[in-house]
Image 1 (cartoon, protein in one colour):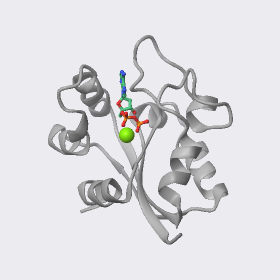
Image 2: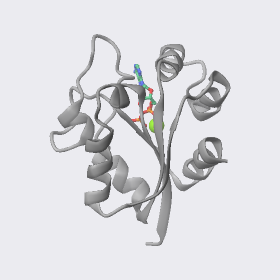
Image 3: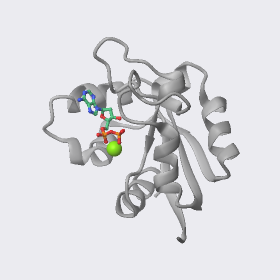
Image 4: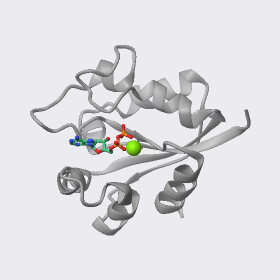
Length: 138
Ligand code: DAT
Ligand code: MG
């Protein structure tokens, strides 16, 4: 399998809780390279592009509002099968049931109904990685 790149976000809850170093450390210890990284306060237009696949779903607006609530850390990470590999490190979407050992499983839980506060985002395919890296890094 070829070397890939992916977009990883440490979402506002991860940054606000001081988990940036912990999460970056897990990515690095796995052996992925942090090829580019920045703290970003995204605007609504950027987020609507990023989450376009979820437009119209009931959780879309709360998700956008949450992502606007504070800065995220955007990371361009590279490595062998990093797209699939980072999603494995992150764990499944709901923190309560994400497997222990994963970022979401170890560090997250559901804060009321706020499933969106699940600490991280990772691109889910080479196509979405290319699109999302363009959105966040240009
Ligand atoms: P993932 O982030 O695991 O790729 P996704 O792409 O399906 O999950 O959804 C994007 C984000 O939207 C997710 O990280 C949290 C939020 N979300 C997804 N499903 C949700 C739901 N049923 N209720 C509330 N938020 C949800
Ligand atoms: Mg997704």
